[in-house]
Length: 167
Picture 1: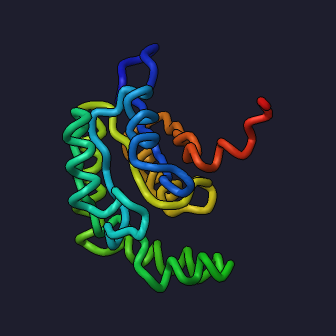
Picture 2: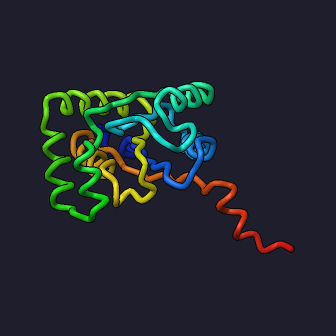
């Protein structure tokens, strides 16, 4: 925790939905993030560049450390409940995951990493309100007083080109 009068330490979150790796890295760099904490249960993706090894390599090339914290991810049944709009089940499953010894150890690890520098929690959903990373960021804020800031990567170039009004 910071000394009286100092700003609280910052913790960032980001989702990669609708973005590419370059745009996510741009957002991380702009915020001064030094470590990305991947809080996906299964760090695989059909989106190019977002599977664990490819993402880790791209971040390393950008000078950003990568740490995967699987036990802080939402397990598949929780993700399925969230997609179905069953929020009570989504929360029940995720809070049960967070109560495990493995998740508690990784929560402490995330806290230690974030306390040493500028860290960012990563998951898929663009909207933090729809993602477990907001719950996780709240738990870390309770532990260490982080000021949480949600980052947003710019849309893919292909997506933004359709809004070009120049003729």
